[in-house]
Image (cartoon, rainbow, N blue to C red; front, side, top):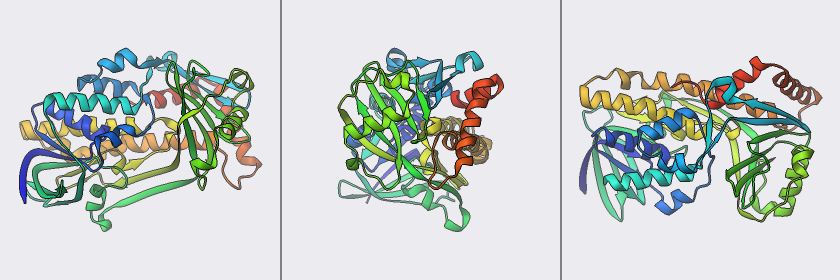
Length: 392
């Protein structure tokens, strides 16, 4: 068995693991990143692309914001619609901040480039990961890489390996508290080469269900419709998708819709999930390994980034100055923000989606909520503050 050593072992080579590694490396802390999938597979994942202002600031701190600043699209607001009624939420006027449209795949690509330039050890194709000795001065991660048994010794372990990863399951089941809400629908999303329908995102409520008009850039869009959780992408032809999409968006937008062939088509299930605590000995959970939010509030990547924000500061203080207050408080500090983001994502989801078996009362509540937002600046400000990101 080959043994390697590092100050921090990072399980998971997605954006949260890479961002944590980048920030620690810039502070002079050595890391090793372990990833199950190939790099090509990681970079093929199509994910959300709305970055909170705090996430943009953190990427700048990590030194990976050059392309983001050049190619990202700042947005000062977004629209909600109730059938043909459009409600504009001017987040810049209400909060003084913006969000930025920049795909998660592009964030990951930028982080890989920066990590390669720093010479970070990133191992792909890692299998059979096991985390032990979390109560010892140096913990151990054993795994198989290219057919060889490997042993990684580190002072701390960051679990950035997603909902199905090994990190969360390493915490004893009787010491974990898990909270979950599974929604009876998913988002069917397509990627298409066409101009955006509107200059900002449009979140649509309609009698036929939810739709979202989003974008990646000036010539590439990401569009979604709510579908039953049992549907498969192959159940939906492009023609069927565009017909459903057009019925759910306001007529003024539908009139300007010129459908384009899909480049990619997939269905994302919706769930709300939180696992507590986020720390077990020398192990710290980050991002999807600890929490999943519905995409309605655009919080998935941003919430992972806020975990990274708290954890990188805590690890730097512990490893460079012996100050363990940050790592001792990491779980409580991160969870306070996680639950607020969970509430916001749940609020957006229930406000905009039709639920199986619902009665007329539920539909009227959605309409009343949207009408209140249209008429109340205070309500829009609360929505804007959460959408642009609560303070870190």
